[in-house]
Image 1 (cartoon, rainbow, N blue to C red):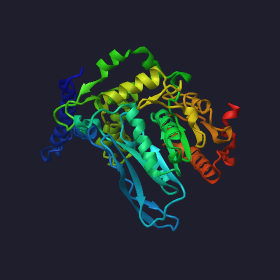
Image 2: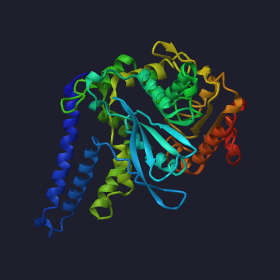
Image 3: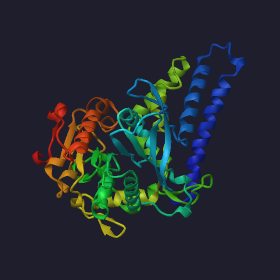
Image 4: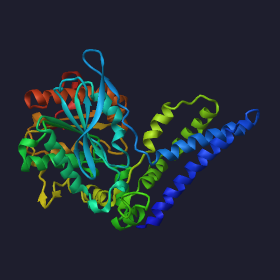
Amino acid sequence: MKYMATYDLMESIRNTNEWMGATARAMASYPAFALSMNPMLALTAAWGEVAERSFSRMVAKPDWGIRTVVGEDGTDHLVDVTTIVDKPFGSLIQFAVRRRAPMARKVLLVAPMSGHYATLLRSTVSSLLPDCDVFITDWHNARDIPVSAGKFDVEDYTLYLVDFMRALGPETHVIAVCQPAPLTLAATAYLAAEDPKAQPRSLTLIGGPIDPDAAATDVTDFGRRITMGQLEQIAVQRVGFKYKGAGRLVYPGLLQLQSFMSMNAERHSTAFSEQIMRVARGEAADHDAHNRFYDEYLAVMDMTAEFYLSTVERIFKNREIAKNEFVVAGKRVDIGAITDVAVITVEGEKDDISAPGQCIAALAMLTGLPDSKKASHLEPEAGHYGIFAGKSWRINIRPLVLGFIDAAAASGKAETPKKRGPNITLAASQ
């Protein structure tokens, strides 16, 4: 399927559905029909409105929408999104709070490159911003990157993280969410061997597949069933003529979205049917719960083919990081080289993407790190999304992580915060 034609066919289908939605909404809203009592007109206009919005969001990068934050003085402080390091495939950005002195906590959020933009962590950023200086990795859409920029695979991703950590300095506290957890661990180990003074102060790994074989999920089962040749034929296409990255081999965002939607097809179908009825009754709003969720969920980005394929092959199939055999730029990365960075893992009891056991596996690999600097937390009843952006994050995990960061900053030790003691265990007790 390595063809521009298939990529452009998907874009044509998306574009046609957006146009059909806009046409249906405009036609059914024509003033001449205002006196008609036919309910199909209202339903047609509602369907058109929902369809147009949904299909248009698939090619639009969401805005961060973080305008202000309340300071310690009780006043609103404006927030500027500024670029600290700019690279072809991703940037390091800061949420700079005006009129606020630098905070004691400097946090680097490593966002997933798994089909959605970094704005998926908007609520995570918002929750940390009042108490921390927040930086985040903002990965770029591969369709907008010219072929002349070269490749981008898991090794390049790791080296990007190394550069970002160096730019922020050793007092940084890194939080990796989901997909980047193994590569963030590898980047920290790389720094431990090559540039120890640039290592972060602490590392929080949330719901990441450090060892995919530690617990089976649909994701790991898929990785075992399919061969790399089959995966390349099914998933890889060339960017079409409409974008700057024309000709680049990618795993298209629209194809990823199709997979996302098919996993919970009935739930999504019900959600859109109910939203159409709400619009027809005049009960919907521009920023209601449905639109807030799907404006983000439907906004997908292309991944470079080499990054996607190398992730599946090296992280999931060959388990190079889990086996401590990962190589970056010709050098083996030894996880055991980490001796000073406090590390905590966070898992959700009902996480069906990175099941419990996959992330905590990192602690056993940290053979050079004292047990006093290792900790883990299993959040009861929490799913994947909840451990970094949902209620579990807001109520339990966020204060836990901030307490861990403070302990690491103050003494260099990962001591168990007393208020969450029953849910945290030191690695030595695993």
